[in-house]
Image 1 (cartoon, rainbow, N blue to C red):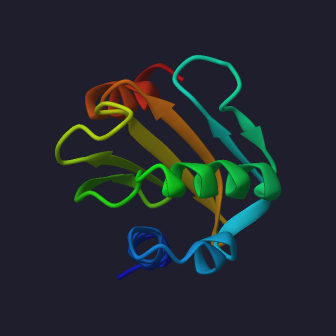
Image 2: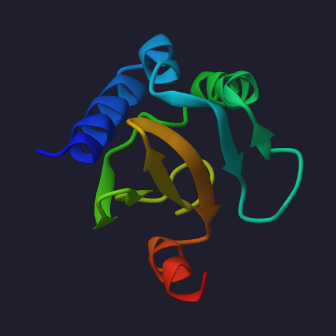
Length: 119
């Protein structure tokens, strides 16, 4: 298992178990989280991301089975096996220096995977 595999597996495990403190340690201080469309759910920095994830956790998000598609050594796409409270949105996660640095959400896993082909 490489560093990205280990980071994602631990991060997903602690998130689905509700351990936001452990997840926070995996985020780069300047991490960004962008929703499908720019708006109020966009976050810049670890504090904003953690605040939003905490709100989503209270609402029941993050507790459903997920799928992980490895794009390359620094990029994965995570999406629910079945639609959750926010539909079937997928998150494309980028990792650098052992930390999660960007999380970009897309309408579907297919959109998230295709994003790297056009960016």
